[in-house]
Length: 337
Ligand code: 5GP
Ligand code: MN
Image (cartoon, rainbow, N blue to C red; front, side):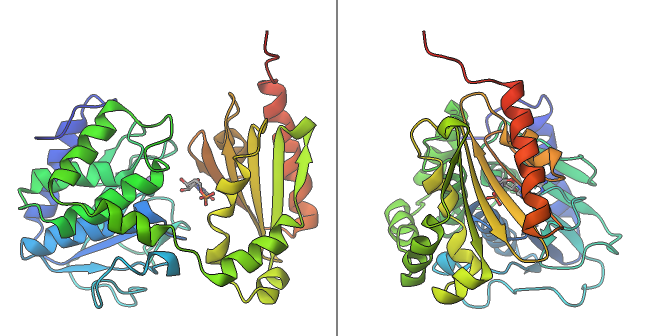
């Protein structure tokens, strides 16, 4: 089975172009993703890296793997950070806009002047790479990587299919989000056919550390319900982390607990780093988390977006409240008939 056509008219051509750039490049290929990497970032990086290495390509993949995903990479497959650029490198940036410099992680890309390949599904992508596959109708970047792997002519193995399945699972909420299309299942079927280890992935993903639960107890103490329960918020700061012996990684999945609140249209997890504040936003019911994130200088997707405000909480919070109020004004709650 081959790649499905999709929402972007030139999708298959773009996939071919990206594969051609990767195949024709004689030098090393550096593979990076976004800061604070998630399953789609790691899965996309590992899938592409393993595929390219199977073709004999020299690949340097830099990604600081969060603890809950350390079960996936093999020792020595990834480095945390690229200190020195190899000569004649091609840069492949996955699951983030290659021009979104503060968000591209694993290396300092600001001075890089070689060819750049970008595979991303963020609606805010500026599409300025040497070759790119950017399709916001794809719920996971890993799906597009799967199509590129096909175009590379790589012999599929379960070691390539499994990380790409991880990317699909994470970014689709285990195939439960509205972003899931028939195409999504077709790609998942292909990966499963190539041996992607579903049960092993989900069993590993469902485990939480003790610090996760201890920190959750702290964070639930900050819960707020606003706008008649349409908006649910919680906050975490360094002191809470210390009391729970937790790390910022433990916070990642809390926003999805919040978004399950009955009657809520917006969930906000506030990460208070002291000098700056990161908002993780999830929306439903016609609201756009993306609009709120963009108003705060961030971005993302309509149902899931984020923004960092470089101000202390006391300054950043009113900005958030203002952006939320504007979005609620734009799409008032519809009263059921
Ligand atoms: P999260 O809340 O899980 O960090 O991010 C949710 C979504 O919004 C992800 O797709 C992520 O890539 C995007 N996102 C989060 N923070 C930012 C940001 O500061 N800028 C942009 N452009 N996107 C963001
Ligand atoms: Mn993604």
